[in-house]
Image 1 (cartoon, rainbow, N blue to C red):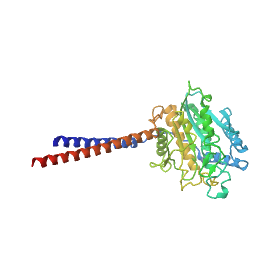
Image 2: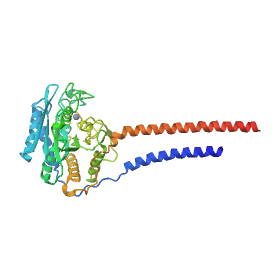
Image 3: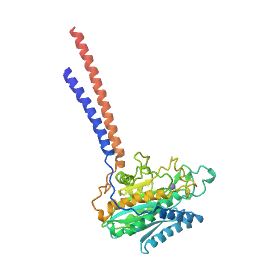
Image 4: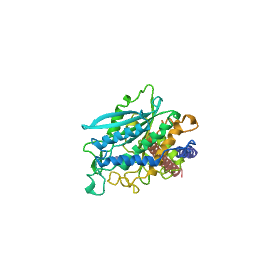
Length: 396
Ligand SMILES: [Zn+2]
């Protein structure tokens, strides 16, 4: 009897140790997968060009900023058209008109290599926020945000990417979309609405509702969507954004790290789920990643939704880091001459972020089971020793 009991407690304690080892080793395996190696290729993204494109968008502010429903917003859409026409007069473009609370809005889409089957989308919002609702100076909270980082930076990187990828288009085995969203940044934050009653990401919501109008889903496939939001600030450092498809975002971190951008793509990252333009693509099942910074509590760039989000708090190097990382991503995965030499995470189906909640539930269930097992074992031992004691007492 005593031997059997000892065997049972040995078995149960070993089971617990086994379960703990299994869980911890699974996590160690997931987090110690070696980083991916970039293919050797010369990058040509020019950060000084990108900075000029950022400044040119800010120059439109002298009239109306780039606020939905204003001439400034219309001028900005036309500015993109002129930049893409300068790359090639026949650059394919589509303007998607829609309204938000009766205000005319417009997403702008340019396509490269339209004959290729696999589509890669690079997106950014181009509207600037109508009110600096988080400005520490309360008197400035009704003023518009210049939107140097929040708006113009991502759009500037897209234009420079279009210029360089156009030169490589014959060598790419993919179609590339450059997608400029209107009406992303007017929702309600801690200081109120950008525009009264508006939600965030109105433009991307509308685009994804009508996405089948922009391509032939029986012949073409959208492989991924990468969003650039606030990629030009001083002290650029990307976060682990939680709606993003983890295998895609992790790959971008590996690529940036491989290019030497250790500070910008840190191993230990801030983490947050941010409702942004990539969200509606994730909802459609398209692997998507948001390249975004800590904008809620960042002593290195505390200008989010303030009037200081201007050209004194952005930095061409940040645009270069972002642009070169994306350029390398395209070559790693889609350069015809480099076919099969890059072992990345394509097609980016694995998503630890989506699994997060399920993993937590499993861990909670396992933990509760272990605790119950231990309590049960303890009670059984207590009962057993009490009985043995009584038997011994009777026999004496
Ligand atoms: Zn914003």
